[in-house]
Image (cartoon, rainbow, N blue to C red; front, side):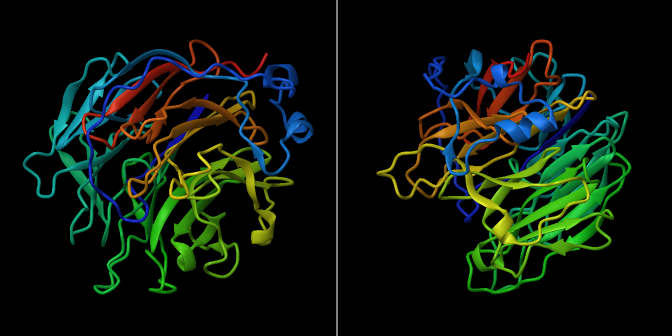
Amino acid sequence: MTLAATGASLALAGCNADTSAETASNETATPSETSTPTATQQEPTTAEQADETEMEPGSYALTDYQLDVRDTFSNGYPTWIDQNGRLYGRDNSEVMISDDWWQTTEELYSFEEYEDNNIKAVVVPDSGNVVVAVGGHGEVGGRIYRLHDDLSGAEKLYQFDYGRVPTSLNQVAYEDIVVLASYAPSDFEAGRHANEVILSTDGGRSFERILEVPLETTDAPNLHVHDVEYDPHAERIWVTVGDNRNTQLYWSDDLGSSWETIGDRGDAPMITQIAAFENSVCFGTDGDPEGIIRWKREGPNDAPSGVDELVHPYVQIESDPTDDTMEMYARRRWHIREDDGRELCLMPFGYSRMDTGRDSVVLASVDGAEWYELYRTETKEILLSNVMGPLSMDGDRRTIVSDSIHEEGNQIDATVPKFWE
């Protein structure tokens, strides 16, 4: 079994203030009645079945399934889970760990004596190396460290020119591949942009820069990286960049030595998550209409020829039609790929803290062709920012959906429904 997960940071248009949080309700929505056969009945687990059962473009996410919530609680900020089921997280300058699904935590390592020591992300690839992103909120760029195996210290592997790896975007690990990218609101007057993508091919022991996105225009809110993905079906790296006239979708089939683009700058839609399935690549949106853009590919070597191939929207999230400032955007997904070809991707969506939206939603798909709404918070006080688990599509299918941004943090400890026979 191979796992892959991603993540990144806070408000995409630059809003960065924390607010207080309160514990989520233990109640989940009742699955709605629908004339569409359930995914279990359709068994959309193979390429052929996915082609037969895909949704009509513009459909709303289905509600046949819901997370089975066992507990909700507030206990800080988990951000990653390794293949052994150990959760990692952050508490200001401390790396925290948990062996009981974040019910209790303990300190693994402290960056307290380091300058600009606020931890943003923790990534643990298959190698077991603990990679920590630290700092990057001021003029000095964030740093990437690897903890020594004996926890006697931390080796600095890379420093961004500007920005940081955020909590809920710009992180992916697949086997020994780790891709990270910087994010921050741009400072156009100072010529500062969070526009770097870095790669490790040795399980997080070293990193090199593979992309520095050029500035197209200052007539845009920002130039910064929105997300990265390693696509094992095509051995491809995907990168999406915002905002507005600076948008672009990049991909590389040679680990960043060369890059292709979707078209002219500004043509690509605003995207904040990328999920590569066998038969398609799905993109979580940044803003209206909230939901999934889908590019259907004919084979692993296929590549998009233009923006018109991106069905926008492919799947929508139902939101309050009276709230024209809600604009949920996609946050850090969890994607597992089993040895037998089955896949499962969970992707949270949350509001921007600049607007009046209050919903956070978790979508899921086993093939990229059908998407289901599994959970909705319907409260401004909880912003679901990342998903960790399940470790397998079989067994207990346990997952933690986390608000790792708001004060105190909130966790939803749940079981993912079984979408397959």
